[in-house]
Amino acid sequence: MTRIYSFAVLFFIFSAISYSVIEWHQTNNKQVTTIDNDITPDFIAEVLNSEIFNDKGNLTYIIDAQRMEHYTKLAVTHFEFPKYTLYPKNSSAAWKMSANEGTLYTNNRVKLENRVALIATDKKSLIQEIHGRYLELDLNTNIISSEQTVYIKGRGFIMYGSGLIVDLNTKQMTLTEHGQTIYKNIED
Image (tube, rainbow, N blue to C red; front, side, top):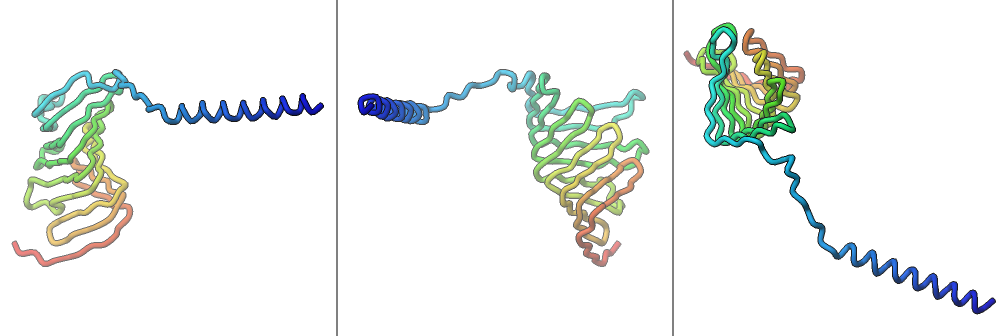
């Protein structure tokens, strides 16, 4: 019985050492990364300028970007430093919107991220500027929304909050969570 016991112990030790050596070699091998061809853009444009018109021939928005990459398989278009000029349906003054990054989806929704700014071109507008890290724009309805913190600069006030919804066509703004408002005297 001692011989069988000895062989079993030796076999167990040999198996444990073999397993340890194999595991050690696999962890020391460098991981080889492969580039997936599905994530390369189908179309790239540098210094993009595009004007979009509605079915009646009215200008709805202009997009300028330093770089645009279109991914057909992902159904998205990515922009670097996009600048939108939005023309509301009620023919009021245009709004300018810019960011460091933007992503356009097939449903005409644009997610703008990193240093997003919405600026009124009408100097008499109650709201002059809206700033945040993230804003979402629906190009079909001209409605802008964000759940993150925003900074709103208006005529005679500065406001902080989150949960923003702005309809550029009706000039209505909703802020679901108000943080702080600072009023100041304005001189016309």
